[in-house]
Length: 77
Image (cartoon, rainbow, N blue to C red; front, side, top):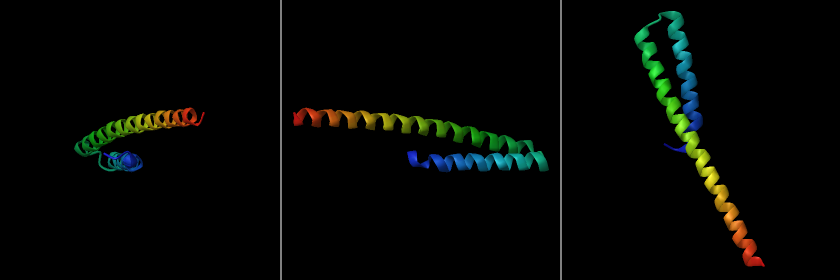
């Protein structure tokens, strides 16, 4: 999954939480609530994985940029 999909996943989680709250207040259908909880759990897991991936790629980009900067400074001397 794309790292840029992170905000949309979080929005989906918020929407599912609202649906869950509506179901609990109206009918209390435990099967629907159970399904929604499972979806939320899976989306949260995916969100955590994407956030870690994004953090890792940002760190790699910073290391690469600093290495290029050092090489450019060494070449200029």
